[in-house]
Image 1: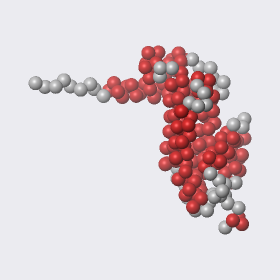
Image 2: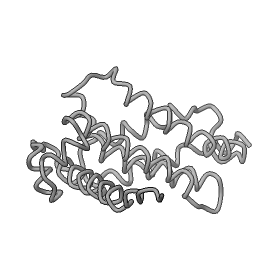
Image 3: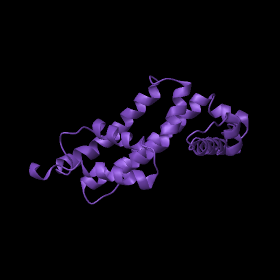
Image 4: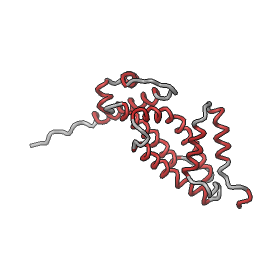
Length: 191
């Protein structure tokens, strides 16, 4: 007597594609500073039915949490992928990726706060992930004496976040960020 064939994995892959399409549509929809996007609009943009949307994300908060977590995952993965000639250059490249994330996530985080509060564990959990990803980069740059040793990663990320909150486009904010990153180098007399 033979066993019935297992369900084809195509449904699982199809479900994953639907989830990815929903997240991509939501990411685009929430990119606008004052986006007031309904779940129905996200469903339409993703090309999926409302049942599929709600099967993946029972509510707006869950969708926003997943979107925020995906963005954090990209920043954490960038810590593994950045390359540079020196540990200081690697850290700077990752901080630039974190800056881009900070400017993008501002709208998602603000929308998420409308549906939860600052004590939502998604914020703390994801901050811990970012810190864990960045700490080895900072330690390597400090060990190579390319970054001041009197700064913590929390201080550096707070500085980058503060710059990301300034109103302006990349042409305006880019030089500010580069100046701040230049300030991470140890003073010349510290050698």
